[in-house]
Length: 545
Image (cartoon, rainbow, N blue to C red; front, top):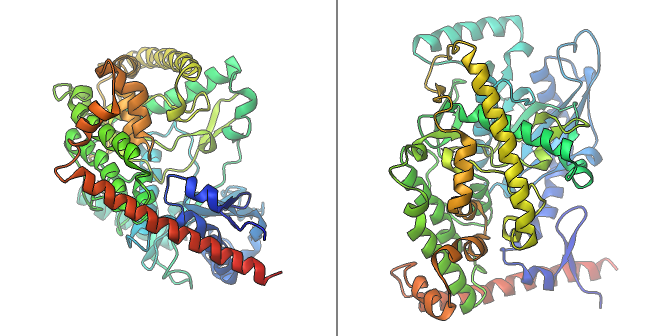
């Protein structure tokens, strides 16, 4: 009998053995492919509604564009993207040649476990596009053309609206101004399409310039000139964001009036990933922070909650010691790496943790010509900003030995380029008067050159703070990051049976042995559920023979 396999992507199948060997809860992954197919089929049945949505937002008839067929749709980790070709004519002269209708996949966003996640994600990403366009216009981002909130409302870019709606928008903008607010350049209207009750979306300009960095990454990543051009582009983005201080930690969100505000919790990819796996985050949607230590404690609590709620989080007692001792140590060391007297740790800036090869578009010389995907772009302490860990094509838990030496060289070169950009910006600022900022709290000028970002990042490497931050950001690599890069700074030797057990008992007031026993029972139940999925897949395959 042929071994049962379950397809997880268009290109990959997994066996039972592979699923059980994975240290993540594989059940959502094992069901995602079939759910995505069903989602696509549902969209196919509502193609007319999709075309009506596109027509409404672009202000053109359905004869002026083509929604491409299903084989051209692109599946992502959290969304599905539907490409649109726009016919060139006088009516479409101000529109891009191509657009993307981007719909969140509810089951990938944890919508069933945490209702409202899809709406939160859409409002935050839309607000981030608006904020970036308003405050960092030099960052090359696609145009946001339309927004659809499930069961509520839609927003259309004002330049594509009718003359009457533009007139109404100007009146609304004036009223908002009287109240001290700035209206986003989008006209709000009710949704009447047949998908309105269940599906949200963003309609975006398709990036025509350049190609994704990922398409040439392996070929040219060690090419000196291209590499420096890339580092220069990323440095400029980081500096643009660092120059605008924010009043608190959180995420920008778009309300029903069309006004953006920094009033949403800091929305991370971990937030949606945890909820996808039915793990709570413990952070209400409306919670923002003015204190860095409180935020860092809640980030560490993400891992506490994963260990408690992921059924296969603990593989055995040695693994429990490995993870719990690392988490206890990270919590104890937080004040060491994040010193309360350092005022820089209380400066907050917009961050782009999802800035990687697939979300960066470059020309042939690797100059950045486009950046996409701002679904997870929280305002965080500037101390969390870091040199990208993917520069040498290794995961953060793989940066040891020769791989660490290679990354150190890339890290140093990146900081040299960053410093060059800082010095260039300082010279330019010295020759110009500061510009006036838009009304509102969203933009406060950062003290120019008071604390250069490159200097802080060099210091973070020397002190090990960058590794502490990397552990905070990781999904489940924090024990390895701690063991490889933090533990040697504080322990001449580390015996899991001695220091490991002692640290583990500091993790919680509860009995650690009872906790481990419970987690091992959870793991057995989880493995039975996984086997059940493969048995069902095998039975389906046999019935089709």
